Length: 199
Image (cartoon, rainbow, N blue to C red):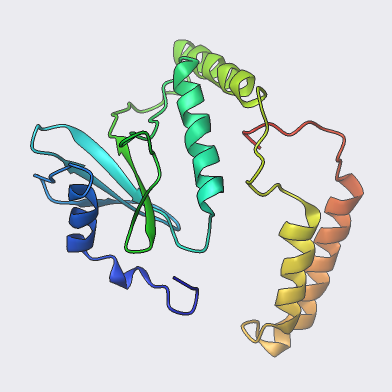
């Protein structure tokens, strides 16, 4: 699947149901779409009344290796007693493929509203963040991109310069503001830190 041909319009409910059925999951409840910025995510219940979430990854956005690193990190977090929804393995595989779409199945876990003024909840969040950092520092991501000035500021600025999306009457002011932002961030940018799998 390539960028020019890609559209989530080809990800029909029947396609999703077929993908799940291939791995032994029969959807009993229908598919409830959940909010997601760039992927397609649906909650459902199977014939045994178990609740799951299936996530179809946007093609061309992440490689299989990058997604698998994310899955491995989630599984390590669970092993270190951090309550996250880690992907379900099917025949030892957490990353599945159907008609060119990578997807994964997760248990659907409930939560509760966070109360920022509840000291017990604040302490629990602090403990979990600490555990996440401890797990995150055990190894580095190899395939996932890192955050850098070039990727997030300099290259996008070049795209803006050539873009017809910005009205011509505003382009000079926009690029000037962008250059000021790049200069300010560059002045304070540090590279003398250790990146964890959380960053």
